[in-house]
Image 1 (cartoon, rainbow over the protein chains, first blue to last red):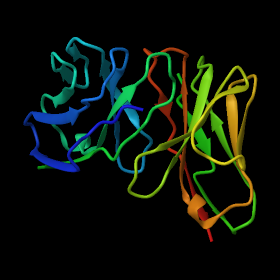
Image 2 (image 1 turned 90 degrees about the horizontal axis):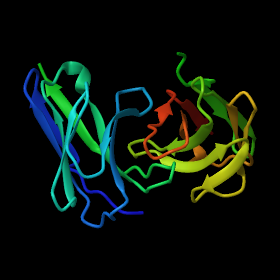
Image 3 (image 1 turned 90 degrees about the vertical axis):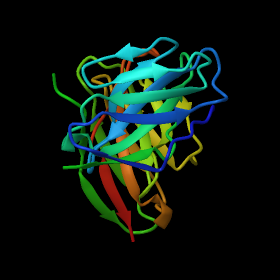
Image 4 (image 1 turned 180 degrees about the vertical axis):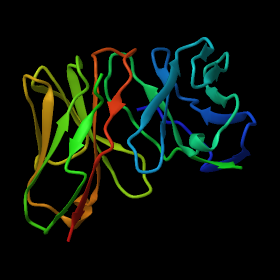
Length: 110
Length: 113
């Protein structure tokens, strides 16, 4: 399974944008980049995914580097409810399982 | 639509005992998978069921087993419990396909003493 590398923790302020980086230098051409987050005392929650192009949805944006060796999850305007552990995951084409790393613990300051 | 529900939310067992954890998938989902999450770690894939057959397994011993029922509910069984089995057990349901996100329940917290 291809590995991802994320910072252990990040801190930001409420109502400011947050950029969460992820390195995946061994990504293969058919791996999808998925992001999930886990709020305290809850199961993981799907945030967004992409293959090559940048993606936007109501929760966040995903910016993917041209060589696909890194990506950035962007929360445009953080709220206190965005405090969570964010996982960057490479999902093999056709595979259902997710391989979680340690993730980034995001703290939002009021 | 109803989400993924798991029961019980908390459970305490003694080493050597057996335990059954239950999961009710999100309506319409045909695939269910189970994950183990130790304290401070990311979830680890145990196995997955599709159409009532196991079709993928992580690095877990055979004493971890499961069932998927025609109504897409699911069970995780663990025999001969060990202290290291203490963890949060998460169930996730989805449709088949790499475009389909997984929907997780909030887990069962198992403590083995």
